[in-house]
Length: 615
Image (tube, rainbow, N blue to C red; front, side):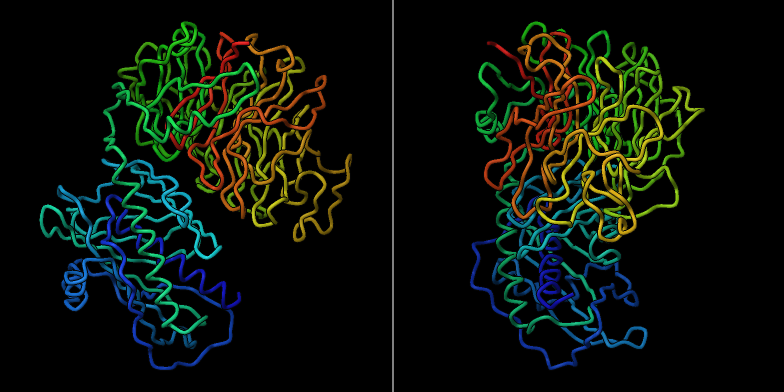
């Protein structure tokens, strides 16, 4: 790891740390010129590879730590701004001399009412909050914050576990990175109300590194500039968001007026001539996979929200060319219940490691009761652990299991596969191997063969590998991961002794899709509303890239299909969710209604759109 990379990691960490201070209601006074911290005494510069760790011999104290730093709080009171200082010293760990960074920050949160960090009752999702924070989402069921950050061109992903130090979340909160960059790092955040308009916020965090990339005075100056910029943008965004307390199970979600940004965004969406797109349902927080019952009830799964919704009047409303009038929460607190499938009166829901079943669900939407556990021995890995599910023409429930990594070989063959279950859960088999992460599939309307999307690996370049549209004509096929990407691209580590040529060990995709476009939901169009040239096509929702230098995706593709085995180059069908480098929405899943119109879920905006053709 070079010096510039180490500096970028240091900057990234402190940026997301300071944002946690102001996540529900961050604010700063107008930024003043930062005062660089004093230069530390010189220390030796180890030359061995970088190693990051948390200092574990100094446990976090439950006593409000800002009270132990009167000089810091005095500066906050006087300057009324967010400040941060970075102290550097050396310590010995395992006979190695490490450089330890101690970061201390603080500031004022401007809020007219009492401040509380109980995010689960206020904000379930933050999005596109600044140039540096691409994604910030909160899972109230597990007290986890998922962050994708960017600083000086470096991107980092991590999941933080957040816990109150005391019963009152308004005093102190501790956090630990449990996945991603800086795993194992811990920190502490404190809050204390000053008056009706101010709450003091303070931050404490530590980590150790083998090398110091640049003089500390320069690093401290850069950190202050970035954190002030982020804090101001966070304040502007968050204070414009409505509070959305979780509704009790079985009660309708309140209908909300579209925000100005949503209204402006919808006007930017572009489709082929004759097609129109409009909001069909709102207040569907985190909307992901959709399933429709023969009676016309639309069921919707989620990830971070942990909820499952029902829209009882969906098909009838579409028939009348109206919006769905009711959104009912039928399950809460589940672990990433992304997948939903309806079959013969029962709703199947896929969590990370369990498949649940709600029997006779349409007769008891208001009081669904406890679900039946169909199967509970799927892997518990959260990386690529969320699932899209569906009942196939053979009467089995198809359940993909993503790879728990970017690129790796796992001993258990259930990883990187598509499995299928008997509906009672007693039988399970692997249907397809070498599938990195499939979050969308459907069966060809004529051949009844399975077609599915698969997300390509990260960190191999902006333009490779491509996402894939695959066809599985039978069980037992292998689609290449992690040895061959996009069919013909040999992995430099795992594919050295593999043959990626067509017709050899691995199946090639039917068609290559957008590199890093995050192809998710996929459906064959089997309706009659769209013109004939669209019937039988495969439609694919691209959720959008997260780590490409320039964003791509955030749109819907249509793929012309020739016969039952071949496809042509994808065409852009609907776009406009991405404006420059800013994405105001993210398509996830597609569903064709009985009237021939198409629904599109958007987990970022909590909306479901309806696409119609007027001619």
